[in-house]
Amino acid sequence: MQARSTETRNRILNVSLELFSRNGYEATGVAEICLAAGVSKGAFYHHFPTKQAIFLELLHTWLGMLDEHMKAARQEAKNVPQALMNMGGLMQMVFQEASGRLPMFLEFWTQASHDPLVWQAIIAPYQRYQVYFKSLIETGIAEGSLEVDDPETAARALVAMGVGLLLMGVLEGQDERSAQLPLQSIKILLDGLAKGK
Amino acid sequence: MQARSTETRNRILNVSLELFSRNGYEATGVAEICLAAGVSKGAFYHHFPTKQAIFLELLHTWLGMLDEHMKAARQEAKNVPQALMNMGGLMQMVFQEASGRLPMFLEFWTQASHDPLVWQAIIAPYQRYQVYFKSLIETGIAEGSLEVDDPETAARALVAMGVGLLLMGVLEGQDERSAQLPLQSIKILLDGLAKGK
View 1: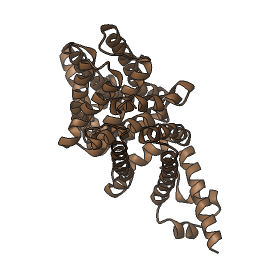
View 2: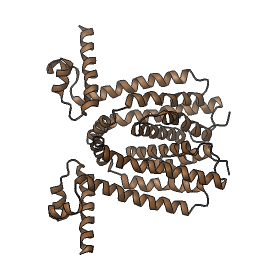
View 3: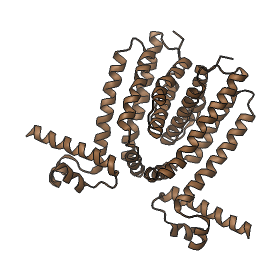
View 4: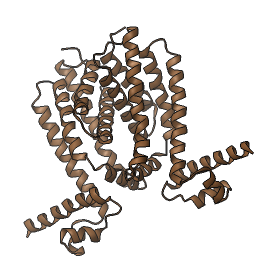
């Protein structure tokens, strides 16, 4: 019974992602999701109070996956600059995941901008990344691989660069040239931050 | 007659910006704009074929103003790194202009993402900035103030950083600390690019 419930929940999530991406967030109704997922409205509302809750769950799952990849990128690196380069390499995966989903995100953000609670849920991860990179940079200073006066500013610059690269990747689409940009940009930032080891 | 026509056109633009910012782009209708601006629908359509044309005109005007400021920032600088720092200083002004207008932009982008022609009009300036910064960096190389292997990549990294800083500034709002971030971030990038003059 538990397994079937999980399976239903996942089917609702997968179908919603597909419909949001194809037809837009606003244009997709709960009735349509239920029909495509083959579940009753009762079953739907058992799992999700609102359509918004689905979007937040999809975002949460995706960020959780990104966290796992970042953790691996950190563990495989012998020092912090290398960890940051490995994380730059993850951008490629992020672009592929995000490809074709910009309209859906824009639409959701537009709706969220009228709702302070949802807005908070959206910007929370990005504040979390600032804290994470600050701590990573402090580790780099401690291990002697980075020389940085102000770790918080360096972390904010890194996050700004990441956000900008993400947006550019989604706007421009991906070709061979742009695929290199995240790594190259992080290299320039690191050259600006690093001791030159 | 010419003066009065220009005055009407400007009034439509100003009223539209105010209504788009306050109530959203989609929620604002042409009828409402006409009422608030005190013009007939005939007069409106004499100046603008669509509501979309108003938004693109507002964007165009704003980018034109930014171009003027960037030109001044370039002329006041004794070399390219200083020009880039001056341009970082302009971010503050950009944030103030953009403040409270994120929902309007998100909404417009959402609509534009369904319309390839409008989409092109939106990403054109950003491609123009890549060309501009590439040329500026080449000038820096020629004058000996920058040492960069690949000016195009450096330009794209700069634009990515600019886009990221803009988005962060708009998301976070502005305080004293974040006001410093654009200059600090550009400084780190320059340290990564510059000869250290």
